[in-house]
Image (tube, rainbow, N blue to C red; front, side, top):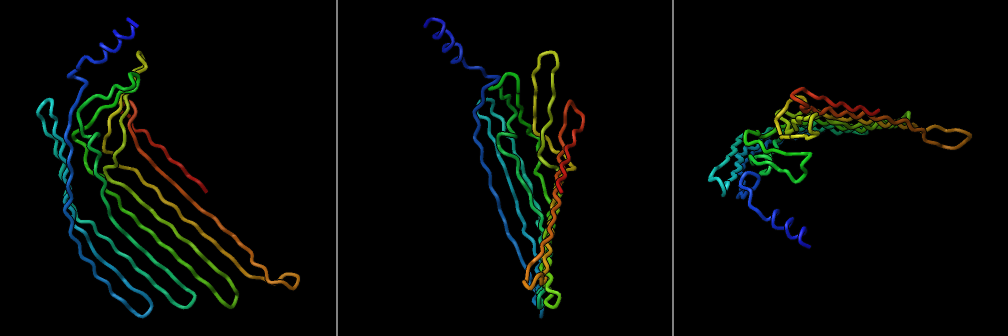
Length: 231
């Protein structure tokens, strides 16, 4: 019991270096416009949103303030075509992602002594360009159906991680950082054809898919690239 009380008393001692008290607030102002043009077999849509994002973190203990501001125009566009037995669409949009308040706080998280985490007040917003398509074709006479869809995304200033490993102590120190080079995407294809075999109408199918993902991080100040490809 005596040893337990000593442990409890030790844990209750205030450590101003490893302790923190923050007030976090965020706000977003947004406005947008959109133009649609319809024609006989489809439509085109163009537009953009304006956003003003602000993140404010106030440290109560050391009387410091971290502020992140990011104003941007977020365009989007789409094209849709539809005819007898044929449908096709293309789309594009641009979006941003804000850092989490905890990632901006300049403190040390030592809840795991072997894995220390630091905040990064210089962290920026990340932005992503997204492209997509979808098609559906049906040819009645040969009774062939083709379906496909896909997307491709790439991110600028992606919020990733920098990790430093101390071989002498086994301690890892990580911090969020902005890095370029992250991208991902997929495409899928589905084909079917109706054929009469042994006097019966049967459908034959062929399908395939392709997925990829690329992430970038830092390990001991060196770029670490992970690429995944599934077919």
